[in-house]
Length: 606
Ligand code: ADP
Ligand code: MG
Image (cartoon, rainbow, N blue to C red; front, side, top):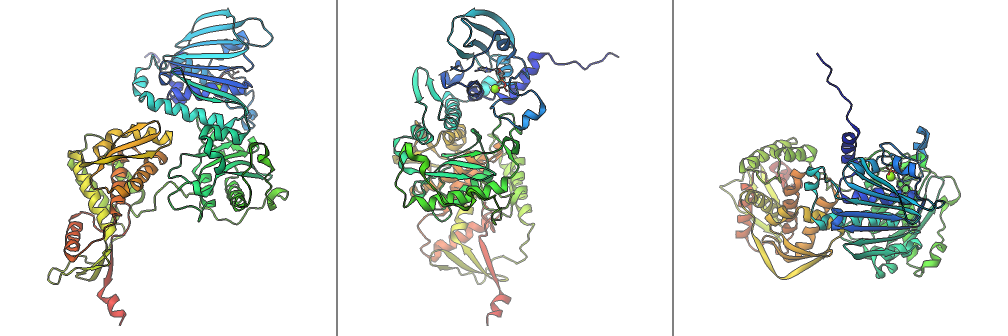
């Protein structure tokens, strides 16, 4: 028998690697701009055509490359940034894996022009599907220009997977803003189809933030400055009164690299406890400087997740420095750009070695998770397993779903006999909010708002499987500002949202909502959208859960309707509807709808 194992040819191996590093045009922008920064560029131009599907060009005035380096740069694992294993633990550059250029060259047409300062002529290389097609001397400025054309031209599956230009370009803007915020001293520009989107001159950090967020943001910013032997923290937080309804303006950087971390984000939210309304989110632009040995950047190919050796301690230091700064800002005048660092915070930790503050932190706490429900993980797994959100779910799926939901909920069984006592049924409405009714074991107290939430949820989820649910047109479109990430997520779930009654159009980042689900009242729309965004834009949600979370948001917001129940008849109807729901003891979020007072408990009161 002949042997069957063969090494993959390079161009195939590169294509496979590309899948990890290059997901969309925005990934190319990120990798190439980071390379320019690593090459000490002080000016970086980004030119995009058709959201990067036709062209992504990055021009920098950095060090440039020699002819040999230019050829080598497209090889896999070719890097000038890491020589030995130890270097990995003391990274000062953005890149180090040496796979971005090899990956990009495997799946696009690339033209590289580069020149070093000490040579008269540069070198131009054209490469397609990992093969060099042309190499010649050229006249070009010092620095490097990469043109990446026809991304994924030879991977049709990935090309088809790309979203609309709008969505893809928003991803590019997100990456661009993150890098521009990480490097205020570098001049950046971004052009799309010949329109200038950004032209950012080298500036101090405060000016860079204002250039990106808009003029009126200057007055909102409170400086943060803290130096301990563990971490140095600088940056700005937004004043509490400017908190946002979403997490769109939250940026964390470590050693000038953007990263995401729900644990640290939570420490910032905690610093704002009591200063902002629940469900509002503070803005922050926080820069951590830390010994590169104490972080691990190599956890993820795109390097946006980072492990910190001393994360608990850093959590506490962020918390206390932000609190200190917030305490100060009331009496401090608004600072101008030049004096930004003169803000002096008297704070014990400056000179003394850091002592772990006595803040107890639940490492497993996930602030993006909604309140713990008794239906917990297995509930979610159950929903995922049912494949909800796919277009071809059938009513049978949902019957199974209820079974699973019931099974899970019954883990903590309610042993009382909740059966309503028909002979003596009489419902008492208390202040329009609670209903008292007889049951065989005593008295039931029903929370009207939660009951409504359950009823609406069940009704919508049943209807939506076979038909789009009813939608009502708004007399005047309702306007609502989104962050670009939120907008992307909204757009990518548009089919589902329309099926559930939301119709609207974006003008830039503003959603003009023209129709909403009929069950929803106008005063609850904002609440509802916040709930939806919270889930789709800020939590990891399996595709199968999308329908569930949107319906849950609609039900929860509609449950809040201001009109309380008026009379015993409407109470009667509500109780009846509630008991027709297969699960009537808990809301979809796992909150108790019914409390009971047993005969024994009543007897004890006398
Ligand atoms: P990495 O950044 O991980 O080293 P890349 O594939 O992104 O890997 O780049 C490979 C090498 O090409 C880099 O290490 C660098 O030496 C060189 N290079 C890439 N882009 C530039 C640029 N804009 N200017 C100068 N050198 C560059
Ligand atoms: Mg790189």
